[in-house]
Image (cartoon, rainbow, N blue to C red; front, side, top):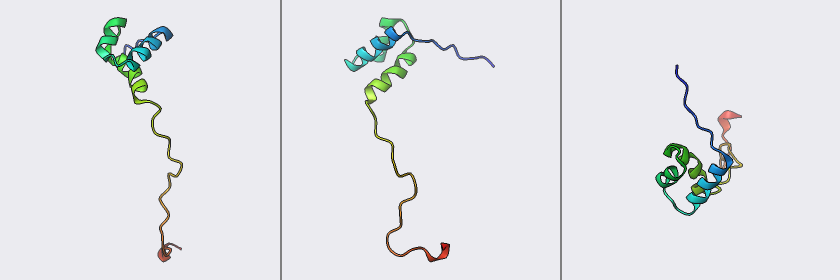
Length: 74
């Protein structure tokens, strides 16, 4: 099974991608300027363009049933 040819970005390249993405440049323009694949740029740029994101939910359990308790389970 062949492995993926992954490219490690330098910290300078990552900083340039973040700066250009925040200015609204397209992934293709950023990739051409840095001579990297567009999919690599998209991975970093997505984090910049999405912002901080929604906070994680605190309550992951089922909501409490309002009203009378379920008698068949107790």
